[in-house]
Image (tube, rainbow, N blue to C red; front, side, top):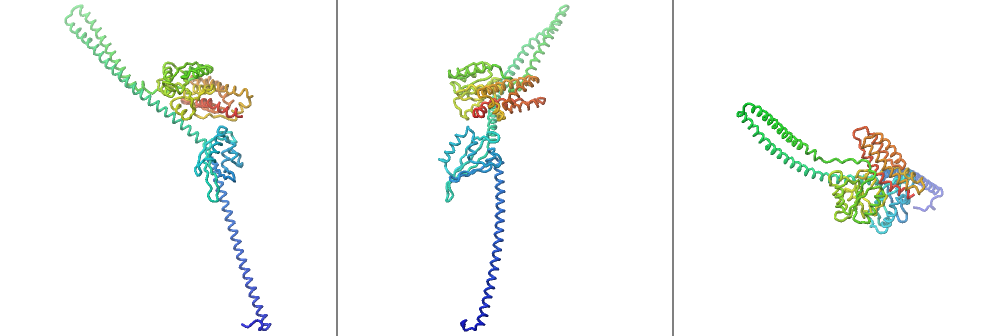
Length: 552
Protein backbone atom coordinates (compact mmCIF):
# COMPACT_ATOMS: atom_id res chain seq x y z
CA UNK A 1 0.00 0.00 0.00
CA UNK A 2 1.19 3.52 -0.83
CA UNK A 3 2.07 5.77 2.03
CA UNK A 4 -0.58 8.22 3.24
CA UNK A 5 1.75 11.02 2.24
CA UNK A 6 1.30 10.14 -1.41
CA UNK A 7 -2.48 10.46 -1.16
CA UNK A 8 -4.00 13.79 -1.87
CA UNK A 9 -5.04 15.74 1.13
CA UNK A 10 -8.75 15.61 0.33
CA UNK A 11 -8.76 11.83 -0.02
CA UNK A 12 -6.59 11.47 3.06
CA UNK A 13 -9.05 13.54 5.07
CA UNK A 14 -11.94 11.42 3.80
CA UNK A 15 -10.15 8.17 4.78
CA UNK A 16 -9.36 9.50 8.22
CA UNK A 17 -12.97 10.63 8.65
CA UNK A 18 -14.24 7.16 7.76
CA UNK A 19 -11.78 5.60 10.21
CA UNK A 20 -12.87 7.95 12.96
CA UNK A 21 -16.51 7.15 12.28
CA UNK A 22 -15.81 3.42 12.53
CA UNK A 23 -13.91 3.92 15.81
CA UNK A 24 -16.72 6.00 17.25
CA UNK A 25 -19.29 3.39 16.19
CA UNK A 26 -17.21 0.60 17.78
CA UNK A 27 -16.87 2.65 20.96
CA UNK A 28 -20.61 3.20 21.10
CA UNK A 29 -21.22 -0.55 20.63
CA UNK A 30 -18.73 -1.37 23.37
CA UNK A 31 -20.35 1.14 25.73
CA UNK A 32 -23.80 -0.33 24.99
CA UNK A 33 -22.53 -3.89 25.60
CA UNK A 34 -20.88 -2.77 28.84
CA UNK A 35 -24.08 -1.09 29.94
CA UNK A 36 -26.07 -4.26 29.22
CA UNK A 37 -23.51 -6.31 31.15
CA UNK A 38 -23.72 -3.90 34.10
CA UNK A 39 -27.51 -4.15 34.10
CA UNK A 40 -27.35 -7.93 34.07
CA UNK A 41 -24.80 -7.89 36.91
CA UNK A 42 -27.04 -5.51 38.90
CA UNK A 43 -30.03 -7.81 38.43
CA UNK A 44 -27.91 -10.80 39.50
CA UNK A 45 -26.78 -8.94 42.63
CA UNK A 46 -30.39 -8.06 43.50
CA UNK A 47 -31.43 -11.69 43.07
CA UNK A 48 -28.51 -12.83 45.25
CA UNK A 49 -29.43 -10.32 47.98
CA UNK A 50 -33.05 -11.49 47.88
CA UNK A 51 -31.97 -15.10 48.24
CA UNK A 52 -29.66 -14.22 51.11
CA UNK A 53 -32.52 -12.40 52.85
CA UNK A 54 -34.86 -15.37 52.41
CA UNK A 55 -32.20 -17.75 53.71
CA UNK A 56 -31.51 -15.55 56.74
CA UNK A 57 -35.22 -15.38 57.52
CA UNK A 58 -35.53 -19.16 57.28
CA UNK A 59 -32.51 -19.63 59.52
CA UNK A 60 -33.92 -17.17 62.00
CA UNK A 61 -37.29 -18.94 62.05
CA UNK A 62 -35.66 -22.37 62.43
CA UNK A 63 -33.39 -21.08 65.20
CA UNK A 64 -36.38 -19.60 67.01
CA UNK A 65 -38.27 -22.88 66.67
CA UNK A 66 -35.25 -24.80 67.94
CA UNK A 67 -34.80 -22.47 70.93
CA UNK A 68 -38.53 -22.66 71.62
CA UNK A 69 -38.39 -26.44 71.53
CA UNK A 70 -35.43 -26.46 73.91
CA UNK A 71 -37.31 -24.11 76.23
CA UNK A 72 -40.50 -26.17 76.14
CA UNK A 73 -38.60 -29.37 76.86
CA UNK A 74 -36.63 -27.70 79.66
CA UNK A 75 -33.37 -28.08 77.77
CA UNK A 76 -30.52 -25.72 76.88
CA UNK A 77 -27.07 -25.86 75.28
CA UNK A 78 -23.75 -24.20 76.07
CA UNK A 79 -20.57 -23.59 74.04
CA UNK A 80 -17.23 -22.26 75.20
CA UNK A 81 -13.70 -21.51 74.05
CA UNK A 82 -10.71 -20.48 76.11
CA UNK A 83 -10.40 -17.03 74.50
CA UNK A 84 -14.08 -16.32 73.77
CA UNK A 85 -15.67 -17.55 77.00
CA UNK A 86 -19.04 -19.31 77.25
CA UNK A 87 -22.37 -18.72 75.52
CA UNK A 88 -25.66 -20.29 76.68
CA UNK A 89 -28.82 -20.83 74.62
CA UNK A 90 -32.06 -19.05 75.49
CA UNK A 91 -33.61 -22.22 76.94
CA UNK A 92 -31.46 -21.78 80.05
CA UNK A 93 -33.47 -18.72 80.99
CA UNK A 94 -36.66 -20.75 81.19
CA UNK A 95 -34.89 -23.41 83.26
CA UNK A 96 -33.59 -20.80 85.72
CA UNK A 97 -36.93 -18.99 85.91
CA UNK A 98 -35.49 -15.75 84.49
CA UNK A 99 -37.74 -13.02 83.03
CA UNK A 100 -38.49 -13.32 79.32
CA UNK A 101 -35.82 -11.62 77.25
CA UNK A 102 -33.14 -11.64 79.94
CA UNK A 103 -29.95 -13.29 78.72
CA UNK A 104 -28.78 -16.43 80.51
CA UNK A 105 -25.06 -16.56 81.24
CA UNK A 106 -22.70 -19.03 82.86
CA UNK A 107 -22.39 -16.67 85.82
CA UNK A 108 -26.15 -16.73 86.37
CA UNK A 109 -26.15 -20.52 86.17
CA UNK A 110 -23.46 -20.64 88.85
CA UNK A 111 -25.36 -18.13 91.00
CA UNK A 112 -28.48 -20.32 90.84
CA UNK A 113 -26.68 -23.38 92.25
CA UNK A 114 -28.27 -24.76 95.40
CA UNK A 115 -26.09 -24.15 98.50
CA UNK A 116 -25.98 -27.89 99.21
CA UNK A 117 -24.47 -28.60 95.77
CA UNK A 118 -22.37 -25.49 95.02
CA UNK A 119 -19.04 -26.64 96.48
CA UNK A 120 -19.31 -30.10 94.93
CA UNK A 121 -20.18 -28.84 91.45
CA UNK A 122 -17.45 -26.18 91.49
CA UNK A 123 -14.91 -28.80 92.60
CA UNK A 124 -16.01 -31.28 89.93
CA UNK A 125 -15.93 -28.49 87.33
CA UNK A 126 -12.29 -27.77 88.15
CA UNK A 127 -11.50 -31.48 87.86
CA UNK A 128 -13.28 -31.59 84.50
CA UNK A 129 -11.06 -28.89 82.99
CA UNK A 130 -7.91 -30.19 84.66
CA UNK A 131 -8.02 -33.94 84.19
CA UNK A 132 -11.14 -35.25 82.44
CA UNK A 133 -10.57 -37.14 79.20
CA UNK A 134 -11.29 -35.20 76.00
CA UNK A 135 -13.83 -36.40 73.48
CA UNK A 136 -15.88 -38.21 76.16
CA UNK A 137 -19.21 -36.92 77.48
CA UNK A 138 -19.31 -36.57 81.29
CA UNK A 139 -22.56 -36.21 83.24
CA UNK A 140 -23.31 -34.25 86.41
CA UNK A 141 -26.48 -33.72 88.43
CA UNK A 142 -27.21 -30.90 90.85
CA UNK A 143 -29.96 -28.68 92.23
CA UNK A 144 -30.72 -25.04 91.49
CA UNK A 145 -33.08 -22.48 93.00
CA UNK A 146 -35.33 -20.83 90.40
CA UNK A 147 -35.33 -17.04 90.33
CA UNK A 148 -39.08 -16.62 89.91
CA UNK A 149 -40.57 -19.09 92.42
CA UNK A 150 -37.65 -20.05 94.67
CA UNK A 151 -38.44 -23.66 93.80
CA UNK A 152 -35.67 -26.26 94.02
CA UNK A 153 -35.15 -28.06 90.70
CA UNK A 154 -32.73 -30.80 89.56
CA UNK A 155 -30.58 -30.38 86.42
CA UNK A 156 -28.52 -32.94 84.51
CA UNK A 157 -25.50 -31.90 82.40
CA UNK A 158 -23.74 -33.76 79.59
CA UNK A 159 -20.40 -32.00 78.94
CA UNK A 160 -17.71 -32.84 76.39
CA UNK A 161 -14.29 -31.20 75.91
CA UNK A 162 -13.14 -31.40 72.28
CA UNK A 163 -9.42 -31.03 71.43
CA UNK A 164 -8.17 -28.46 68.92
CA UNK A 165 -8.20 -29.64 65.27
CA UNK A 166 -6.42 -27.60 62.61
CA UNK A 167 -7.45 -23.97 62.89
CA UNK A 168 -10.34 -24.75 65.24
CA UNK A 169 -9.32 -24.29 68.89
CA UNK A 170 -10.17 -26.58 71.82
CA UNK A 171 -13.77 -26.00 72.92
CA UNK A 172 -16.53 -27.17 75.28
CA UNK A 173 -20.01 -28.31 74.23
CA UNK A 174 -22.71 -29.09 76.78
CA UNK A 175 -26.41 -29.89 77.06
CA UNK A 176 -28.47 -29.36 80.22
CA UNK A 177 -32.02 -30.42 80.97
CA UNK A 178 -34.43 -30.29 83.91
CA UNK A 179 -34.86 -33.80 85.39
CA UNK A 180 -36.90 -32.88 88.50
CA UNK A 181 -39.98 -34.77 87.36
CA UNK A 182 -37.86 -37.72 86.21
CA UNK A 183 -36.18 -37.99 89.62
CA UNK A 184 -39.55 -37.72 91.36
CA UNK A 185 -40.95 -40.48 89.17
CA UNK A 186 -37.88 -42.65 89.78
CA UNK A 187 -38.22 -42.19 93.56
CA UNK A 188 -41.91 -43.02 93.46
CA UNK A 189 -41.27 -46.09 91.31
CA UNK A 190 -38.47 -47.23 93.63
CA UNK A 191 -40.69 -46.73 96.69
CA UNK A 192 -43.46 -48.73 95.03
CA UNK A 193 -40.94 -51.45 94.13
CA UNK A 194 -39.68 -51.66 97.70
CA UNK A 195 -43.23 -51.73 99.03
CA UNK A 196 -44.22 -54.38 96.50
CA UNK A 197 -41.16 -56.49 97.31
CA UNK A 198 -41.93 -56.30 101.01
CA UNK A 199 -45.58 -57.14 100.34
CA UNK A 200 -44.58 -60.12 98.18
CA UNK A 201 -42.35 -61.42 100.97
CA UNK A 202 -45.14 -60.91 103.48
CA UNK A 203 -47.64 -62.71 101.23
CA UNK A 204 -45.20 -65.59 100.72
CA UNK A 205 -44.76 -65.90 104.48
CA UNK A 206 -48.51 -65.74 105.03
CA UNK A 207 -49.08 -68.37 102.36
CA UNK A 208 -46.67 -70.70 104.15
CA UNK A 209 -48.50 -70.03 107.42
CA UNK A 210 -51.83 -70.57 105.64
CA UNK A 211 -50.70 -73.94 104.26
CA UNK A 212 -49.40 -74.99 107.70
CA UNK A 213 -52.61 -73.85 109.39
CA UNK A 214 -54.71 -75.65 106.81
CA UNK A 215 -52.74 -78.88 107.30
CA UNK A 216 -53.03 -78.54 111.08
CA UNK A 217 -56.77 -77.90 110.86
CA UNK A 218 -57.26 -80.86 108.52
CA UNK A 219 -55.34 -83.10 110.90
CA UNK A 220 -57.42 -81.85 113.83
CA UNK A 221 -60.66 -82.42 111.93
CA UNK A 222 -59.54 -85.92 110.96
CA UNK A 223 -58.80 -86.74 114.60
CA UNK A 224 -62.14 -85.28 115.66
CA UNK A 225 -64.08 -87.21 113.05
CA UNK A 226 -62.34 -90.40 114.09
CA UNK A 227 -63.14 -89.65 117.74
CA UNK A 228 -66.80 -88.96 116.89
CA UNK A 229 -67.00 -92.21 114.96
CA UNK A 230 -65.43 -94.17 117.80
CA UNK A 231 -67.67 -92.50 120.42
CA UNK A 232 -70.77 -93.15 118.32
CA UNK A 233 -69.81 -96.80 118.15
CA UNK A 234 -69.04 -96.89 121.88
CA UNK A 235 -72.38 -95.26 122.83
CA UNK A 236 -74.72 -96.88 120.36
CA UNK A 237 -73.45 -100.43 120.91
CA UNK A 238 -74.50 -100.66 124.62
CA UNK A 239 -77.71 -98.71 123.89
CA UNK A 240 -78.62 -101.24 121.25
CA UNK A 241 -77.92 -104.07 123.68
CA UNK A 242 -80.00 -102.37 126.37
CA UNK A 243 -82.94 -101.75 124.04
CA UNK A 244 -82.83 -105.32 122.74
CA UNK A 245 -82.70 -106.76 126.27
CA UNK A 246 -85.78 -104.75 127.28
CA UNK A 247 -87.66 -106.11 124.27
CA UNK A 248 -86.69 -109.63 125.31
CA UNK A 249 -87.97 -109.09 128.84
CA UNK A 250 -91.44 -108.05 127.65
CA UNK A 251 -92.46 -111.67 127.06
CA UNK A 252 -91.18 -112.79 130.43
CA UNK A 253 -92.70 -110.07 132.64
CA UNK A 254 -96.36 -109.81 133.60
CA UNK A 255 -98.59 -107.64 135.78
CA UNK A 256 -96.94 -104.60 137.40
CA UNK A 257 -93.62 -105.66 135.91
CA UNK A 258 -94.92 -104.71 132.47
CA UNK A 259 -95.51 -101.14 133.67
CA UNK A 260 -91.97 -100.97 135.08
CA UNK A 261 -90.59 -102.37 131.87
CA UNK A 262 -92.51 -99.77 129.81
CA UNK A 263 -90.92 -96.97 131.89
CA UNK A 264 -87.46 -98.44 131.31
CA UNK A 265 -88.16 -98.88 127.64
CA UNK A 266 -89.28 -95.24 127.25
CA UNK A 267 -86.22 -94.02 129.10
CA UNK A 268 -83.96 -96.12 126.87
CA UNK A 269 -85.60 -94.71 123.74
CA UNK A 270 -85.13 -91.16 125.02
CA UNK A 271 -81.51 -91.87 125.87
CA UNK A 272 -80.95 -93.31 122.37
CA UNK A 273 -82.57 -90.28 120.72
CA UNK A 274 -80.45 -87.93 122.84
CA UNK A 275 -77.23 -89.80 122.00
CA UNK A 276 -78.10 -89.79 118.30
CA UNK A 277 -78.80 -86.04 118.37
CA UNK A 278 -75.45 -85.35 120.10
CA UNK A 279 -73.53 -87.45 117.62
CA UNK A 280 -75.29 -85.93 114.60
CA UNK A 281 -74.73 -82.36 115.82
CA UNK A 282 -71.06 -83.10 116.49
CA UNK A 283 -70.70 -84.49 112.98
CA UNK A 284 -72.48 -81.42 111.56
CA UNK A 285 -70.10 -79.13 113.50
CA UNK A 286 -67.19 -80.99 111.97
CA UNK A 287 -68.62 -80.40 108.48
CA UNK A 288 -69.11 -76.70 109.27
CA UNK A 289 -65.54 -76.49 110.53
CA UNK A 290 -64.31 -78.02 107.29
CA UNK A 291 -66.29 -75.46 105.27
CA UNK A 292 -64.96 -72.63 107.46
CA UNK A 293 -61.32 -73.71 107.21
CA UNK A 294 -60.49 -71.28 104.38
CA UNK A 295 -62.13 -68.41 106.23
CA UNK A 296 -60.38 -69.33 109.49
CA UNK A 297 -56.97 -69.29 107.77
CA UNK A 298 -57.60 -66.36 105.42
CA UNK A 299 -54.85 -63.76 105.05
CA UNK A 300 -55.26 -61.21 107.86
CA UNK A 301 -56.12 -57.67 106.85
CA UNK A 302 -53.93 -54.80 107.94
CA UNK A 303 -55.57 -53.08 110.87
CA UNK A 304 -55.70 -49.29 110.46
CA UNK A 305 -53.66 -47.25 112.88
CA UNK A 306 -55.66 -45.44 115.49
CA UNK A 307 -54.98 -42.26 117.40
CA UNK A 308 -51.50 -41.46 118.67
CA UNK A 309 -50.96 -42.65 122.29
CA UNK A 310 -50.24 -39.93 124.83
CA UNK A 311 -47.31 -41.89 126.34
CA UNK A 312 -46.03 -44.33 123.69
CA UNK A 313 -44.43 -47.59 124.83
CA UNK A 314 -41.03 -47.78 123.16
CA UNK A 315 -38.57 -50.70 123.07
CA UNK A 316 -34.88 -49.80 122.69
CA UNK A 317 -32.60 -52.51 121.20
CA UNK A 318 -28.97 -51.38 121.65
CA UNK A 319 -25.91 -53.40 122.69
CA UNK A 320 -23.70 -50.47 123.73
CA UNK A 321 -24.54 -49.37 127.27
CA UNK A 322 -23.73 -45.71 126.74
CA UNK A 323 -25.80 -45.46 123.55
CA UNK A 324 -28.64 -47.28 125.25
CA UNK A 325 -28.54 -44.84 128.16
CA UNK A 326 -28.66 -41.86 125.82
CA UNK A 327 -31.61 -43.23 123.86
CA UNK A 328 -33.46 -44.03 127.07
CA UNK A 329 -33.02 -40.49 128.33
CA UNK A 330 -34.00 -38.93 125.00
CA UNK A 331 -37.12 -41.03 124.78
CA UNK A 332 -38.01 -40.32 128.39
CA UNK A 333 -37.71 -36.59 127.73
CA UNK A 334 -39.98 -37.01 124.72
CA UNK A 335 -42.65 -38.50 126.97
CA UNK A 336 -42.18 -42.17 126.13
CA UNK A 337 -42.36 -45.22 128.41
CA UNK A 338 -39.10 -47.05 127.69
CA UNK A 339 -37.96 -50.68 127.91
CA UNK A 340 -34.52 -51.88 126.79
CA UNK A 341 -32.82 -55.02 125.48
CA UNK A 342 -29.22 -55.66 124.43
CA UNK A 343 -29.54 -57.51 121.09
CA UNK A 344 -31.87 -58.23 118.19
CA UNK A 345 -32.91 -61.68 119.38
CA UNK A 346 -34.04 -60.23 122.72
CA UNK A 347 -35.96 -57.52 120.84
CA UNK A 348 -37.88 -60.15 118.85
CA UNK A 349 -38.77 -62.03 122.04
CA UNK A 350 -39.87 -58.80 123.76
CA UNK A 351 -42.16 -57.87 120.84
CA UNK A 352 -43.63 -61.38 120.98
CA UNK A 353 -44.42 -61.02 124.70
CA UNK A 354 -45.57 -57.41 124.93
CA UNK A 355 -47.28 -54.81 122.78
CA UNK A 356 -45.06 -51.82 121.94
CA UNK A 357 -46.05 -48.70 120.04
CA UNK A 358 -42.55 -48.37 118.58
CA UNK A 359 -39.12 -50.04 118.44
CA UNK A 360 -35.83 -48.11 118.20
CA UNK A 361 -33.42 -50.68 116.72
CA UNK A 362 -29.62 -50.46 116.50
CA UNK A 363 -28.44 -51.97 113.21
CA UNK A 364 -25.16 -53.58 114.34
CA UNK A 365 -25.73 -55.90 117.33
CA UNK A 366 -24.47 -59.34 118.40
CA UNK A 367 -26.48 -62.58 118.19
CA UNK A 368 -28.99 -61.01 115.78
CA UNK A 369 -28.43 -57.64 114.06
CA UNK A 370 -31.08 -54.98 113.54
CA UNK A 371 -31.89 -55.95 109.96
CA UNK A 372 -32.37 -59.62 110.90
CA UNK A 373 -34.44 -58.68 113.96
CA UNK A 374 -36.65 -56.42 111.82
CA UNK A 375 -37.27 -59.20 109.32
CA UNK A 376 -38.09 -61.60 112.18
CA UNK A 377 -40.58 -59.14 113.69
CA UNK A 378 -42.25 -58.64 110.30
CA UNK A 379 -42.78 -62.43 110.17
CA UNK A 380 -44.57 -62.54 113.55
CA UNK A 381 -48.30 -63.29 113.54
CA UNK A 382 -50.86 -60.62 114.37
CA UNK A 383 -50.41 -56.90 115.14
CA UNK A 384 -46.83 -57.37 116.41
CA UNK A 385 -45.66 -57.69 112.80
CA UNK A 386 -46.84 -54.13 112.10
CA UNK A 387 -44.95 -52.49 114.99
CA UNK A 388 -43.14 -49.37 113.67
CA UNK A 389 -39.34 -49.83 113.75
CA UNK A 390 -36.85 -46.93 113.61
CA UNK A 391 -33.32 -48.04 112.76
CA UNK A 392 -30.17 -46.37 114.13
CA UNK A 393 -27.03 -46.91 112.05
CA UNK A 394 -23.45 -45.67 112.09
CA UNK A 395 -23.53 -45.50 108.27
CA UNK A 396 -25.35 -42.92 106.16
CA UNK A 397 -25.11 -44.61 102.77
CA UNK A 398 -28.33 -44.37 100.78
CA UNK A 399 -27.92 -47.97 99.61
CA UNK A 400 -27.90 -49.20 103.22
CA UNK A 401 -30.92 -47.05 104.09
CA UNK A 402 -32.82 -48.52 101.14
CA UNK A 403 -31.83 -52.03 102.19
CA UNK A 404 -33.02 -51.44 105.77
CA UNK A 405 -36.29 -49.92 104.56
CA UNK A 406 -36.75 -52.89 102.24
CA UNK A 407 -36.17 -55.18 105.23
CA UNK A 408 -39.19 -53.59 106.91
CA UNK A 409 -37.92 -50.62 108.91
CA UNK A 410 -40.23 -47.61 109.07
CA UNK A 411 -37.40 -45.06 109.14
CA UNK A 412 -33.61 -45.02 109.48
CA UNK A 413 -31.59 -42.50 111.53
CA UNK A 414 -27.83 -41.95 111.39
CA UNK A 415 -25.74 -41.97 114.58
CA UNK A 416 -25.35 -39.95 116.66
CA UNK A 417 -29.12 -39.69 116.87
CA UNK A 418 -30.28 -36.09 117.34
CA UNK A 419 -33.22 -35.35 119.56
CA UNK A 420 -35.12 -33.42 116.87
CA UNK A 421 -34.52 -36.15 114.26
CA UNK A 422 -35.65 -38.82 116.72
CA UNK A 423 -38.73 -36.81 117.66
CA UNK A 424 -39.68 -36.30 114.00
CA UNK A 425 -39.17 -40.00 113.22
CA UNK A 426 -41.35 -41.02 116.18
CA UNK A 427 -44.11 -38.56 115.25
CA UNK A 428 -44.03 -39.76 111.66
CA UNK A 429 -44.07 -43.45 112.55
CA UNK A 430 -46.97 -43.05 114.98
CA UNK A 431 -48.94 -40.91 112.54
CA UNK A 432 -48.40 -43.28 109.62
CA UNK A 433 -49.08 -46.43 111.63
CA UNK A 434 -45.74 -48.05 110.84
CA UNK A 435 -45.25 -47.02 107.22
CA UNK A 436 -43.69 -43.59 106.96
CA UNK A 437 -45.11 -41.53 104.14
CA UNK A 438 -42.94 -41.68 101.01
CA UNK A 439 -44.81 -38.96 99.15
CA UNK A 440 -43.30 -35.50 98.77
CA UNK A 441 -44.53 -32.85 101.21
CA UNK A 442 -46.38 -29.98 99.53
CA UNK A 443 -45.51 -26.58 101.06
CA UNK A 444 -46.03 -22.96 100.13
CA UNK A 445 -42.34 -22.14 100.66
CA UNK A 446 -42.84 -18.37 100.59
CA UNK A 447 -45.47 -18.61 103.34
CA UNK A 448 -43.27 -21.06 105.30
CA UNK A 449 -40.30 -18.69 105.12
CA UNK A 450 -42.38 -15.64 106.07
CA UNK A 451 -43.99 -17.45 109.01
CA UNK A 452 -40.58 -17.88 110.67
CA UNK A 453 -38.53 -14.95 109.36
CA UNK A 454 -41.12 -12.45 110.61
CA UNK A 455 -40.34 -13.65 114.15
CA UNK A 456 -37.31 -12.65 116.24
CA UNK A 457 -34.56 -15.22 115.68
CA UNK A 458 -34.75 -16.40 119.31
CA UNK A 459 -38.36 -17.56 118.80
CA UNK A 460 -38.06 -19.30 115.42
CA UNK A 461 -37.01 -22.74 116.66
CA UNK A 462 -39.71 -22.61 119.34
CA UNK A 463 -42.25 -21.86 116.62
CA UNK A 464 -41.00 -24.82 114.56
CA UNK A 465 -41.19 -27.22 117.53
CA UNK A 466 -44.64 -25.93 118.50
CA UNK A 467 -45.88 -26.38 114.91
CA UNK A 468 -44.71 -30.03 114.83
CA UNK A 469 -46.29 -30.69 118.23
CA UNK A 470 -49.62 -29.12 117.21
CA UNK A 471 -49.71 -30.92 113.85
CA UNK A 472 -49.09 -34.24 115.59
CA UNK A 473 -51.74 -33.52 118.22
CA UNK A 474 -54.51 -32.33 115.91
CA UNK A 475 -53.72 -34.95 113.23
CA UNK A 476 -54.10 -37.58 115.97
CA UNK A 477 -57.46 -36.08 116.93
CA UNK A 478 -58.57 -36.19 113.27
CA UNK A 479 -57.62 -39.88 113.01
CA UNK A 480 -59.35 -40.68 116.31
CA UNK A 481 -62.51 -38.89 115.13
CA UNK A 482 -62.43 -40.82 111.84
CA UNK A 483 -62.06 -44.13 113.72
CA UNK A 484 -64.98 -43.21 116.00
CA UNK A 485 -67.10 -41.80 113.13
CA UNK A 486 -67.55 -38.66 115.28
CA UNK A 487 -68.51 -35.89 112.85
CA UNK A 488 -68.46 -33.12 115.45
CA UNK A 489 -65.02 -34.09 116.79
CA UNK A 490 -63.72 -34.39 113.22
CA UNK A 491 -64.93 -30.89 112.37
CA UNK A 492 -63.32 -29.40 115.47
CA UNK A 493 -59.98 -31.21 114.97
CA UNK A 494 -59.94 -30.38 111.25
CA UNK A 495 -60.48 -26.69 112.01
CA UNK A 496 -57.57 -26.63 114.49
CA UNK A 497 -55.25 -28.61 112.21
CA UNK A 498 -56.06 -26.45 109.17
CA UNK A 499 -55.18 -23.29 111.11
CA UNK A 500 -51.81 -24.64 112.23
CA UNK A 501 -50.98 -26.06 108.78
CA UNK A 502 -51.83 -22.84 106.94
CA UNK A 503 -49.73 -20.83 109.40
CA UNK A 504 -46.59 -22.57 108.10
CA UNK A 505 -47.72 -23.19 104.52
CA UNK A 506 -48.31 -26.97 104.82
CA UNK A 507 -50.87 -26.95 102.01
CA UNK A 508 -50.55 -30.71 101.38
CA UNK A 509 -52.19 -31.47 104.73
CA UNK A 510 -54.99 -28.98 104.11
CA UNK A 511 -55.68 -30.30 100.60
CA UNK A 512 -55.80 -33.97 101.61
CA UNK A 513 -57.97 -33.21 104.65
CA UNK A 514 -60.39 -31.20 102.50
CA UNK A 515 -60.48 -34.00 99.90
CA UNK A 516 -61.32 -36.58 102.56
CA UNK A 517 -64.09 -34.45 104.07
CA UNK A 518 -65.60 -33.84 100.63
CA UNK A 519 -65.80 -37.63 100.11
CA UNK A 520 -66.89 -38.38 103.69
CA UNK A 521 -70.43 -39.18 102.61
CA UNK A 522 -69.37 -41.56 99.82
CA UNK A 523 -68.64 -45.26 100.07
CA UNK A 524 -65.62 -46.00 102.31
CA UNK A 525 -63.45 -42.90 101.68
CA UNK A 526 -59.75 -43.51 102.44
CA UNK A 527 -57.95 -41.48 105.11
CA UNK A 528 -54.55 -42.86 103.98
CA UNK A 529 -53.61 -39.93 101.64
CA UNK A 530 -54.16 -37.54 104.59
CA UNK A 531 -52.08 -39.75 106.86
CA UNK A 532 -49.25 -39.81 104.29
CA UNK A 533 -49.41 -36.03 103.82
CA UNK A 534 -49.05 -35.46 107.59
CA UNK A 535 -46.11 -37.88 107.81
CA UNK A 536 -44.37 -36.27 104.81
CA UNK A 537 -44.94 -32.80 106.31
CA UNK A 538 -43.36 -33.76 109.64
CA UNK A 539 -40.37 -35.22 107.81
CA UNK A 540 -39.90 -32.07 105.68
CA UNK A 541 -40.32 -29.30 108.28
CA UNK A 542 -36.76 -29.51 109.66
CA UNK A 543 -35.20 -29.62 106.17
CA UNK A 544 -37.22 -26.61 105.01
CA UNK A 545 -36.38 -24.76 108.22
CA UNK A 546 -32.64 -25.32 107.67
CA UNK A 547 -32.88 -24.33 104.01
CA UNK A 548 -35.17 -21.29 104.16
CA UNK A 549 -34.78 -19.92 107.68
CA UNK A 550 -31.33 -20.71 109.04
CA UNK A 551 -29.73 -19.91 105.69
CA UNK A 552 -31.52 -16.55 105.54
